[in-house]
Image 1 (cartoon, rainbow, N blue to C red):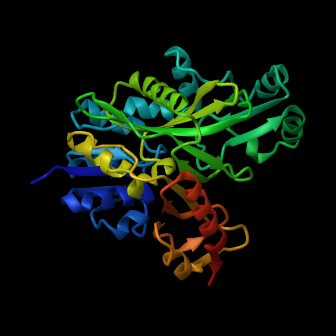
Image 2: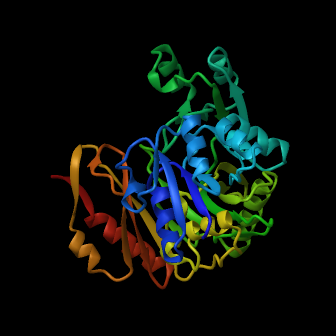
Length: 385
């Protein structure tokens, strides 16, 4: 009988992890607080409970041989105790504890001489003073903990901050403190997914280029390969490997980078799990990011990360004016197109900026990928029922 993988979290990333393992009869059990979560569509083995509940995490561990997590907002202390008692957890809980706190992340980069943008840590008590002393008018303000999907991150100038601070705006509320960060100058945002096997071997996926929605801070779409030249792409891969190496942990890591027009290259953040920027690998690479994580968890060799064809992936996001039950308009027109793949996450209702799914397009050239992606994006819309 093969090993059973226990997953803390039952969202869309867990769902796609299960789908990738299904052809090889990999078995899973997941922890989630609701019985109708996305992963429930493909896996019936569930422990019902909060991702913060140490008791339920312990129950999950008794039913699995190895544990992982598909979201950062879980009880890292409970996982650390299980690891100490002999349960394999990948990536290691010590990595998760760093990732959960953006301040610790930035300090990790500084301590290991990983290039990152200038930053300063601040508390609720000294935030206004820290902003006033910041050496530029514009800056990025990040909550150290609790942010996700663009929340907890604001691009500000000092006047806008002062207005929010004077009004005691809810968006500034954070009991864990803040990171003030230099704004990247004329930069493209790049993601490199790094895989680290249990034997220490590593591989990287070709860098992809991400474009974000300026209002929601959510990724709008990605294109692989990136528009950078071969030398810059390789430098991105090397920087991503350096950033992950000091974690000394098996796992799958999405390393988000800023690459400035002047050549500056900096690590922004790392996600210790499958990532939105790797969805395209399901169709575009010999080994998807999800199959790769399964291989890592099961102690198998890493698979090829080579790009079979250029690809683009676009998020399907809940629009601002639609709430509740929804459907996709013009779906038949999209399905009639060659090289277009729809992935819906099993969420029955929509709300503004909710990730409902994604689509990926493949083509023979990067130019054709962009053209096809823009066409699908223009006709595939979320409407109310």
